[in-house]
Length: 485
Image (cartoon, rainbow, N blue to C red; front, side):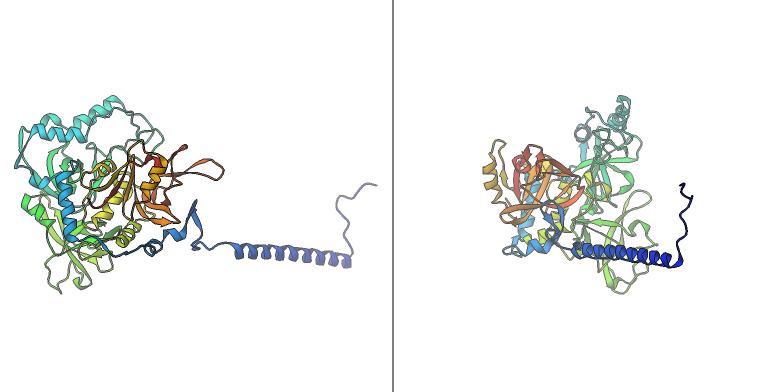
């Protein structure tokens, strides 16, 4: 018998029963879903649970600076007092070959010296470099970069000029904004990016680019090319008096900003990074600063560049809520931990790109909040004759390295080729560090080598870190440095 094209319509009573059973079935399914969701929610960890792992072995509890300061013995004991910090800086300036004593540069400099500075900072690239489209740079493009240095137009003798940096500005290998990379697929590690200079930094200006848009400058810790508009020219005495003026405040947050002001846009919402030292302006207690009452902030003097390129100073307000200190912070273990953790999670920026910093920049800024000066790059920091600690011999065995590592204290700096980490304490005898890293690598439980692109300031135990699939990071340590000789 052929089936009808549609099922026959059931009697009304039967239809009601079918509907009731269907409804009950649907309710049972819905109830089961609700119970399952409730069970799942009941067992799910809160995103604020301190035991949630963010990396293997690293929980949210480890991200709290209080976790580490509470484990310290004598957390507030001075490592160096103000006099000892000054003595250490004098030692650093005397002994470290990577620093420039720019205040004592002679009245005139010879072309040979200027050329040597530039050629050291801007060597002609020999390895392949790629632009942001992944295209390899041509020899002709390199020729143009070298020509932009204008080395043939250096005066035989020139008067040394000085200035103050007026805004956070990149210091470049060549006088160009062109970004270049070591591999076609990289977009982060710009090989022409050296570092950044911050407002109030004194510089010696010894040359300018062929197009006149860039200046070659020496700062205390670095040399390179900076945009001309970022420097205001002043007399030697005026420039260096600025960094000695007192009273002063020091930026102790990762970054703070001046208040908004329409009247002086060049100092409005100006970014100021940790360690920047700002002298207080002599200002009447009730006189408005660009329309704002000064009593609820700090009135600081900031350098600005006039239309003709010369240096002037203008008052600007930092809000009282800004993370600043009246003078440098006391150098204690607890303060070292607290300062380092203020950068936790900040985006990694090679050479201070992305409004951030890299591993050695991170360490430099933390120490600058205590008034300490160290070299800018990891190689110079690791080999500095002015720092205490131990140089690790390349042939040192793993167990001997572990014994040496056990002596490292909070605030000590661990160096591997191209990277630096700061010791923050121990958990169950294992050393932990905070560092600004593009990536970290570990071996997973299944034996697989795993690279984590962290791209920021992170907290990790040291021992699980791997330099490559077969080499532990601890076996690549070249130096353990501490902040006193």
